[in-house]
Length: 188
Image 1 (spheres, helix red, strand yellow):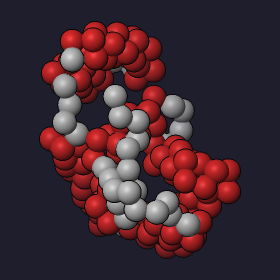
Image 2 (cartoon, helix red, strand yellow):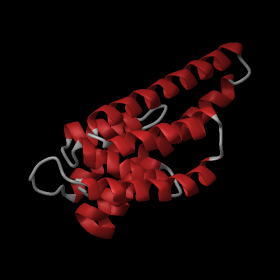
Image 3 (cartoon, one colour):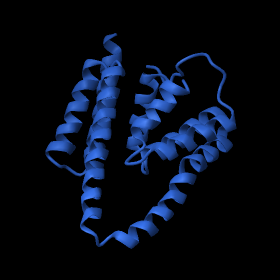
């Protein structure tokens, strides 16, 4: 099983590369950074291939905290140790924090207007579409084994359809996924 494989044998990114990559992710990630993070990490910067990125996000989803922040820590640490992890998180969070403060002040001035509520509804729909699009891209390009497709379907039904709480579902699905991966690897 590959573990966070890079897309090429390119030299590992510098601290500056990591900072600017995650700064760009943070700047462009309105409504969620998942789609743009994948684009920058896999397509633009070639830090990971699609399978490595899917594995990274899978690990990050099982950890507490935001997936992209977890990915920033893991990639930064992988390429440049503790300094890389800190630089990636700082780059990821710097501009969104400044933007959020500015937008919160502006929204406070117009929050009672009916058009503000319509705009929020539209933003929520756009964010849901971005999440679904990223999930579809990851599933089609990750080269998943049959057992992994079954686990993805079970997770979708448990959390998306049956509305089971995520933590208890993960406590059941992660061990089942590990068992399935073990038996899947033995069949190869």
